[in-house]
Length: 114
Length: 113
Figure 1: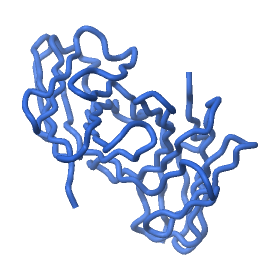
Figure 2 (figure 1 turned 90 degrees about the vertical axis):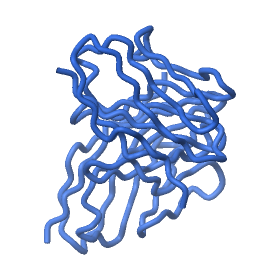
Figure 3 (figure 1 turned 60 degrees about the vertical axis):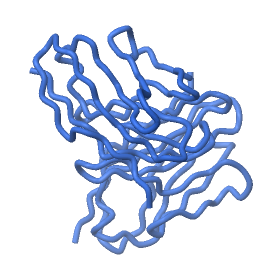
Figure 4 (figure 1 turned 120 degrees about the vertical axis):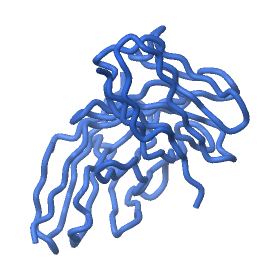
């Protein structure tokens, strides 16, 4: 069964540095998502992406965050200047169409900000 | 804004016992409802979903869930729990016409031998 893959599995970065988290969604999916899960807390929606533009975003997704689909397969989340509170698991997900379709999740990237 | 509540943070059941995990949502229209399971260090795996029609839906691994509009609930059930079911379970709501999902805070399930 096709999978969503995320790299790296663990990223350690100094505060203030830029970080790029990478995802390869399932190839025939059209909608892509990023979520954040701070340790011990709920999964929080960050952003959804469709047709090469942001579809929805949450209050968490401020100007420090950006997403991009640089080619036909990758979907990236960039955090421009990381803060300690950005430490979390970041999950990428994709689905074939919108909010009435189940999402397929990657295994996540653990981001640790020092 | 929509919200999802899972009132039980931790639940412990004995292997072979029945299980019910509660989920309540706040949403004006008919919601798209999902249950996901997360094992440690892994992503979320879909257990089952409800969009419309029969309010009792069957999922993988012997799980089922019932949509009750009058109670704004979508509780997850399993008649006989196995040790491998120990994990964290998340209820989620998809918002119609918006490409956005809301997750509950999760319920951690422990299974006693």
